[in-house]
Every structure is written in structure tokens, then in C-alpha cells.
Length: 149
Image 1 (cartoon, rainbow, N blue to C red):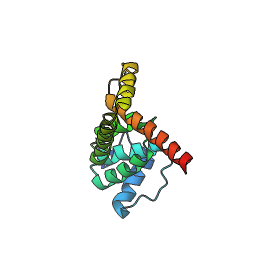
Image 2: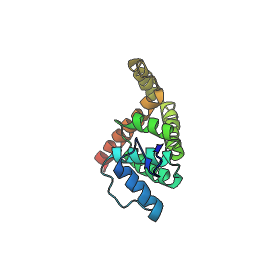
Image 3: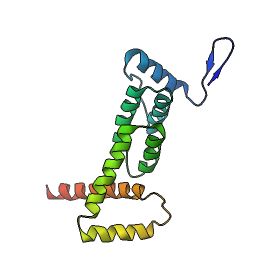
């Protein structure tokens, strides 16, 4: 942010669309513009956290939680931690706790997890691998349930 002598404020690192959404949210308490992509939500949570608009951060957290998938889980977790998005951080921590319970529930799961750990030595954050495992298990369980019905 750069303030000038003529009373204007230059905001860098924020798009006009994001700023428009933030201002509209401050005035009417809603998001009426269509957010077309996950990137729009990410830009918005960065802006909301930058300006300390906690209710907007919470709205972004709710939307991002619905958009988490196997491919973007590590990125969204990093963004949540960077923005201090507490609800989203608790969501990721909860997923990790659930995965710990699942992986310790049977020897077969333990063996699979150990094999995955050996194959994923380059991954520095085992939490990301655990979250991916949760999504894989959920997809497999859903497919099995659909076949049974």
C-alpha cells in the first residue's frame, strides 16, 4: 500500500475484482458477484485476511473447504495457514486425525501406509500424503457403496 499526498491510496497485490467484492461485502454483507474459480476464492481470502475482515475470511473458508480435492489439498492447506484461516486449518487437522485413526485400525492399512511412505520419500509433509489417502479411501468406499446399491 502506498499513500500519496493527494489523498489517494494505491493498492498493489490485489485485483480490482477482489477489491470490488471486498467493498461490496463491507457495505451489504454479501457476495453477489459470481466467483468463477478456486483462484478467485484464493485471491479473496488473501484480501480478506490482509484487511482483517474475519467474517469474509470465514465465508471464503467455507467455500474453499467445498473445493478441496486430491490435486489441490496441499496448496489450500498452505494458503489456509498463511492467511490464518482457523476453520480451514481445523478442517485439515481433523482430516489428519481421521486418517490416523483409519491407518491404525488394521494391519492392512498400516502396511499400505508404510509402502506409501517408502515411495514418497521426496514428500516433506506427510500430512499432505495422509490427506490424499483420505480422498482415495473416500472415493473407493463411495464406489463400493454404489455397486452394492
